[in-house]
Length: 329
Length: 256
Image (cartoon, rainbow over all chains, first blue to last red):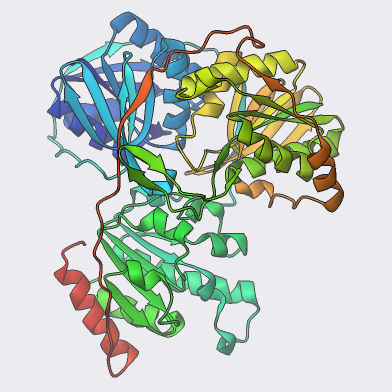
């Protein structure tokens, strides 16, 4: 099995799922890591340290900003000439596009958000969630190379061996950009709830505190500040239900659920979230779920291991203080 | 501006979907327009309102999918086209993209093609970039804001790292996210118009193409392992006491 792993990064910041993919690739044999970008020496070094036997890198100014078309053309050209059997990628907004386009170029199959993989002989079968996680399918790709994007945190991250080195092969960039990046609007902080080990989420309930004497949105902002403090102590990220996003309390990039991100952190704390099915499908694979809600009948408790019936404005700061003390922070 | 909104019909989100005898079943749950695709129709109608032109709703699916197309018509789409062929029953994403691309070219002269970000059933989110790739058009995915200027389109993409502004020449393919704005409800007039609309059905022969070979096939379906969670409610004298107990329980689970 000739396996490639595409290392996804944003301006040099590697998506941790890339290393998880490298770890899975190593379990199947020798692995070549594919790295595109401009000035990616540090990414190349890290790929060797996480276990890549070979790195194939296209380091070119034309690849400085990720755009789907030139990245797809570059990867497809490499795969056409070097014929890997399997290309593993982490699952991100970028790699969904990239793998989809390469599948067109290479006339092969793409399997996204895969949580388990079986290789028997030449056949690759991948397990993935369909129908919002209500059902699992085992999908088989009969063409090569199979393009498989892996669900974040579904596979273990390999250990890093400092100073480990391997063969570096330089590749050409295919500069066929069909669009240009004009910039970034700085209205949102970077957030990637999919990779976080801990997610602290808020829902409609974060705006429910009349005693503050603030309007709905200002109350919600105060509520999310409290959740942010708890998340910071736990080293996690802040998530939100669709209701909270739709009400304008917090940007869309924080949304957990059917129309947002599916997350599987080690610890998920839901505060002021009632637990609509659309939210539950987005977080029910978390290892430990804790729910905080004023309403003891809220459906979120049915998914939770531990529950606290109470006011999040009172309880969350108390939990933050208790965790801070116990974690020595 | 000629805008095409690609939609799919899926079981309603409330449907009890299960794996039974290796098949996916959802009982008699209603089939609806894929909720993400309502945003595509909404985005297309917004652009029509801004620049003038027409919106065509396009769907690949069985005869029943006409109902999803009627929803798009009731929202305000000018026309609808269904591509339906028995040979497409087990079509994979790449095959569907090739069929959509052929239909888009047959409709002709499109400036923009809009998709939802993913479907509720397969959920891969690859149909839009694959269709764009087959057409050779620029792909602007996860657009939260769209502005057409002359022959170009500028979109604000909602990504993990923030909002990225990207510009491309038309024609282009876009997928839209919910920042575009809540999909409008069908109007009474719209519903009446949709009920009377004749929806052309194109076969693969009408698109002058053979059935695409499925490179990805479903070998098995399983129900997810049941999670027997029983919620333990933590109680105590004060919020601080409850917090202390809960903190100990969380640490004892060794998830941190």
